[in-house]
Length: 229
Image (cartoon, rainbow, N blue to C red; front, side, top):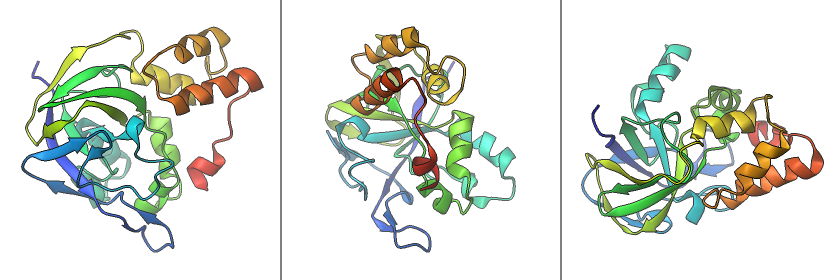
């Protein structure tokens, strides 16, 4: 099996989101050549909402290009899914996805070392990006959300770089498994499972807090504001 690699890299600048008063950097453009990466991500990339996007736990967003086949079948007339970068991802890859990536995985990409911190939680801005009022919900239900890295070692990455797994501390916790606990009804309030997930050292703090709230409140959080504002 061919090693996973970066099929393309993407960066975005803050601009108006569709025809709204909101701003976003979700509109990513492909870049070629070496890109400098700091603890906060690709240096030339921007985020408009520093509370919910970016930061050390969400420095780089990665989305599997194979997932686009799913979206093409769901929206066969949408040209936006013909090219990578549509979901605001920085890294588009071939050879890995939510089933094969585990929380806490550490990868060498170019001269950078990165660690999987969480899967993406789709938000309402996707609805405007794709001009479809339930796009955020569709992504959540698909479990094809992509994932975020924290940068352990700064460096350079570029299109064509191999994505080499160098450490897998939690082989039992694929991103798909975590997403099922987060978004599907089965086991979503199982206290043993939630306590085990909270103990994952590398899991982003925001996810740990969410799981702790479920334990304390004995119910799943309301998704309406995140998905539909």
